[in-house]
Image (cartoon, rainbow, N blue to C red; front, side):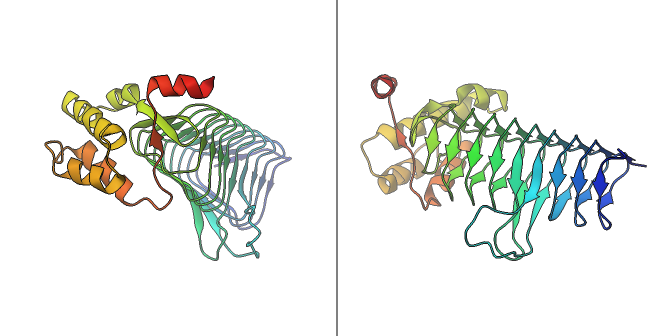
Length: 269
């Protein structure tokens, strides 16, 4: 049995799994489907086609499945698909897809903190963290275990790679490769070494990433030349290196440029 507060509105057609809790004043539309053990806090709104897995937590005032903020939206039937074990804190907003039959997709174990916004047709892989006030524009893709600091802004169609980390208040308008740290507008300054180590990447993988990072960003070659050098080098069979290269080869918006620590201090001044 699910526990639904008397002041909550659960429209006919909504499907709730076993053990769900719906708080005061919450609204669940007719196309909402919740897996077992989900919690919807006070005044949260789930509307449109929202399909969630198990044990998701939706905070006070969050809106999941709202209409996209897209001038091209013409009332198409679209949705939001969410996996298991995610946390949507207070006033998080996740908008559904723009075009007919499309979805905004969030994986498993993501943590979206207060006021984060995920626009239409975004795709978040497992374990992504969005700190307070992060804004993702439409069609952004964020890969596994990426961490975006407070008030980060990401332009539409940008990709953020696996285990990448973005410093708070940074603006990103170009693709950020896996394992890198973005610290200024469209700029990286080193690898997310703490996150890489905590994720279980061994010493061989970490050292290989350090070498290819140096080669790609500071080797004096253009993108194609740098990738050719890395692909033909001694680290080409390392899993993390292959992921780094594969990501870069698929870019459509270009890749963030590299900064040395000294260059970063000059930018900040």
